Image 1: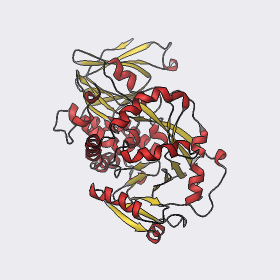
Image 2: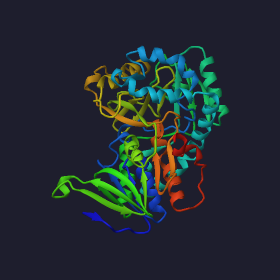
Image 3: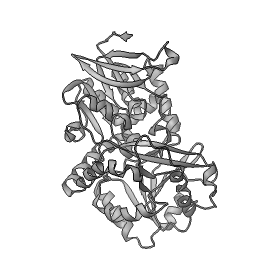
Image 4: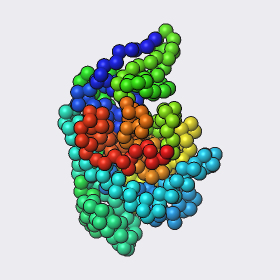
Length: 430
């Protein structure tokens, strides 16, 4: 059974996470007929349980030479933010080899400039989508804190200088100034940085679902099914998808035909890209969160820890602790201990007392699609002029979703593209 209708302005977006949703909305706003495909309902991957932080200040690639001395301690620390599952170590070696190469000063500086080019317009790109969908209450722009427990300010001063010299709006705060903003931080916090132009959402899943619902209300379509292949035939694209048996007498493979297709399915993008003949060193940084109940500790804005490498974000349903990284692939079961390890860090920084029953608190694990240069893949496929890529945003999927959607829409509608896309082209890996 096949859908052979091919409207000249039809676009398929494979992936119903925040990147796919924002891309679909921008395409729809440009007058195109858009269908989103996903094996799950919308916002069920990394878009569901992320930290909710629009981290536009994070213009530094993860492949940073300064990280190397910290790695052994992080790996040995049971409460540490970084872990490689032993059974996955061999498989991860090629990714980490490329990661190390990207620490070279020239590559680091180029990647930093490319991150900054996406982050600078990121918040502005969200505004028309959030306003049109009426989701202003889920989006706040009151800044965020990065706090330090070191009594000497030299280390934080260095971090401050780095951000300042790269055009990030930041203030260096004393202990009393930090406590004035976030009174529930305890005396272990010695000083901090305040990022003035940073925002957060009080519920990332609801934000993504709200945007998705608005997309449907405006005439967008959604097909729930496992996409097994995206191909180009002449000047059309074909989406092969297996729909759930509840919608068909059998799980027969369906073919849907569109003018253009966008692959935006995050950590699951690699097989679809490989079928088209492109190599991409995409791996998965598995992230965890733990939820403290409402009123356990009130924080007005997101607070990250310089030493502990985690973040606490106020949400509608409580305080979300997030930030751990685990390399273990897509198939290994979640390790709740990784989420539970976040609780002692929160208890060390917050007052009054934080609950100590980690095993009874809600936790979650999701897959961050990460590339070794810390840059996403955004742009047209080099030898498939009807197929586009929008994946690999690592820790910045929420931050860069709207600007990614805007750029893809500009490409497809052939208007001047507002950001130079050459640093994000998949050709850098071929």
